Structure formats: C-alpha cells, structure tokens
Length: 384
Ligand SMILES: [Zn+2]
Image 1 (cartoon, protein in one colour):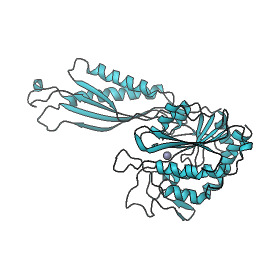
Image 2 (cartoon, rainbow, N blue to C red):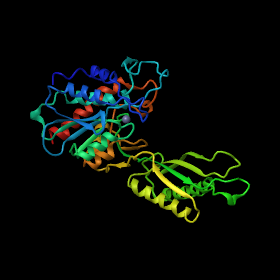
Image 3 (cartoon, protein in one colour):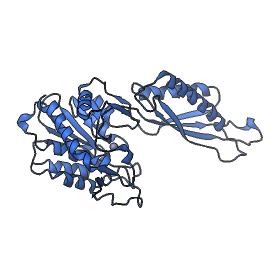
C-alpha cells in the first residue's frame, strides 16, 4: 500500500479538496474530487475500488473500497461532504490544514474527513492473507443535505457487511441511538374577503389556529406514548418553526403555511407519523371549506437504534471504556442498518466543533483513533 500518504498529509489533502454540500446550488460543490483522491491513494493497494456515481449528479459519488472477501466483515464509513462555512468568521483558512496548539483546524476536520484518513492509516499494514472477513472503506456523498449517497447505497444493496462504524464526531464515545428528523409543511387555502363581514371569506389563518391545536395535542400524545431515557430529551419533539399567512389586517386571510420539525425516537416510523398527522389535520378541517396540501420539506432521516447487546456495540464499549450513548443528530446509520449492518457511531471529532467557524480536531485524538480502529479490524476481520 505504498501510495497511501502519511496521515497528516492525507488529512491536509482532504481538507484542501473542497466538497461543500448545500441545498443552494451556488454553494454546492459535489464530492467527486474527494472520492477520486481516496481512490487514487488506494490505486496500488489490495483494496478493490468501486465508484458509485449518483444518478443525475455528475459531481457526486460514493466510494466502496473492499479488502478481502466473504461474509461478515467491517465497514468503516464516513461522509466526504462538508457544510458551507461562514466567510470572514474563520481565523484560519478553512481549506488549509492549520496545526497549532494540539488542534488541527480546517473545514471537515471534525465532521468528518479526518476519519477517512484515520481509517486508511489503520488499514495500512493489514496483509491480504490475514483477513478472514472483509474490511470495507465507505465514503459517501451528500450526508449534510439530502442523504442521497446513503440512499443510493440502499438502492444498489451495497456494500454488504456484518458491522459498521461511522466516524461522525462523538468524542471517541460509542453511540448506538439517535432520533430521526422530519420537516413538514402544511398549506391551507381558504377564501379572501373584506374583513368587515366574515361571511365574505373563509380564513385560512383561523383554520391554521385549529390545526396548530391539533398538532400540539398530537405532540402531547406522542410524548406520553414514547419515551427513551438514554436521550437528553427523552421524548419525541415537535417544533413549530415557521408560519406565514395573509397580507393585510382588513382582508380575510386566504392562504397560510406552517412548517414544523418532528424528531421521532427509534421505533417511530417516518411514514406512519406523516400519515397520522395528515389524517388528524384533514379530520379537523372536515366541512370547513378549507383545503389542505401537505409537503415534506425533505425526505426525512429515520431514527436509529442498534441493540445494546450487538457485538459491535459491546466491542466499541470495551475498547473505549464508555457505555454506548444516544445523540441528538441524525446520521447515515439507519441506511447502513437497512443494508443489514449493526452500526455504531464512533469518531474522533467533537460535535461542538462541527458546523462552526474554526472547526478543529484535537491532535491527541488521532493516535487513539488509529489504535481503536486497528483493534476493531483485528477483532472483526482478522480473528473473524
Ligand atoms: Zn457529519
């Protein structure tokens, strides 16, 4: 594996290869250059390289690099995209790795390009003859926006493996649960008219008042029905985040739109939740003459839970010395779960530094991460 550069050179090159994900096309850069960089490093290695292009997205791809054959095995996974950065708010160049005061600064250091370099570093000395189960390096596209990379994996039913570690920033503590995310819009249409006579119109704004009451009642029921004490906020949350309706005090409001965010616990299926609130809203609007249109603002991220007694959870707990926790952010883990992997989220960055100006990773996290990944590879792939 002679072409794999030294660890800090890999991190530096990954940071210097911009791959901003954004729903704003002016900011979106795609991740293909990062995928090509990784593929290039692995060119003379024993890894089999597969670049999975995303349909209709020429600048986006996933990389599946497989070392060894057979069933089971371990996936070390990371997304290659970053969020955009706040121009002018950084003390350092976000695209140049700055090594100072036990910190490596750069966009994506914590979240989460460094992990891909650390995974390669851990795999550097593995010999083909040692492997009883495959070691797979997985680098994905678009985690920060649409999860289209992870969804493409599910569509292709690849890769197949028994276990996965996603190196999202968890401060090197294992995580086996996170909530899901839904963002939904409800648009109500009534009838405008002069404010002096309610009979002249049908207020969408007043109807939305009823709808909000229904949603808040539903929230209360959800929170009574579902609790999970491992989470800092142990119930599903529902936040009303945006409302717009009407234009003038002297006009009956003909149109009103509400956006809300729902964070379900593991075991709460996204589509069932969508069906349930839509049903309730339609019920409460029956015979009002108000039209309701529902829209999901994005596809949603399912919640994830890997059982406490899963082998990868137990292994990660033993190697780190921490019990597996629950976190508040979403990841690609539910998609890897759908591919049959038991997944733990465990990475060297800290979530407090992610999505912030002056993002950094602690330099003294690198060596322990390499040791941890080597032990995982040894236990899962070599001892089998
Ligand atoms: Zn991330």
